[in-house]
Image (tube, rainbow, N blue to C red; front, side, top):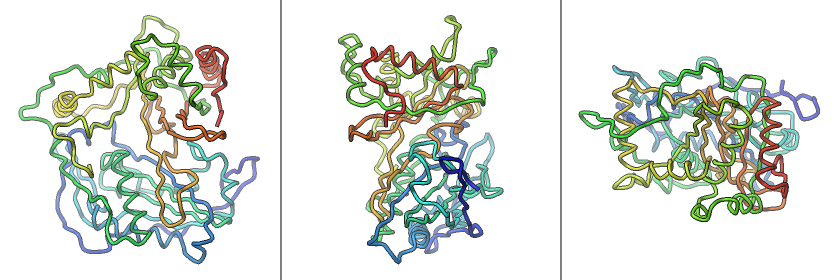
Length: 422
């Protein structure tokens, strides 16, 4: 049973989970992950969701059947996704391409799209829309992907899935789902074919750490600054007015900063004030980067503001290589969790599987509970006025949330309310 907005409930009836295997025979081989891929910080399952409206042109077509068949076709090209991860010596991860397949659940809900609630992460009732199949939530020796298609009473449906983050990043999983969409619409093969080449991001021999990597420092959380469980989630929208206000408050040499850098600095500052009180402590922000174009040559297709700006520009090819070497030398450590705020620019999944663009497509949890630390996935969305902007979900204890909102209003000089402004 899952709750609807005003406390009502709806039922989800699920068929037994099944394995979708590649539609054609695929090679049985071992594929090594890179030393960037198999670090501790990526060893988790990432949930995503696409939510589609009713499309009269598709009446008579079953979305569950269409998606199931398209996934089977896509796995012919992306056959490592149908395999299983094995862990070798020194915690090295390798994909055994077994062709066993990905998990699939077909379901029906006695609810309409409107009854699902606000289509923003965290998606309400995600546990009902993405069933946690027993034994499938691990990283090693488990299916690398779990998919659930839930038909709604209104003719719409939810295409939800979670994937092993070591096998793909956001851009990589988008490419796979885009391939599913193309095949669902009748294409014979994906327009972009996958390229493995994980060796590009493996450690050198011998490995040598040439730069400092504070994101992997060992930090003892003596003051228990990791956010407790009694939390609330709020969404903050930074549109043209808010971005302009923040930009004008910066010194002239920083006016050229990107929107992502400005919003990151703003939220980092406000969140730090809201949650920590010791001015002598060090509080970190970690920015997840897409390094495809930082490499030389670039990876093949298929594969406080000044501080934030400086950190992003330091994400060079040598920095990436140094991280890979650090992983090997230090046993693939996790990211630093204590006194840390992690931000990432999340992709909007406008994938058409035959029913048109989704009403919502993207991360399902907005960063909440994805890590045992504080995370925000920034999403590019339109507000109710049709303005383009960045939506930021934040999860904090109620009192800290009040402080954060107050600090945001001060930064915006009282000119605009960005809390829940979508």
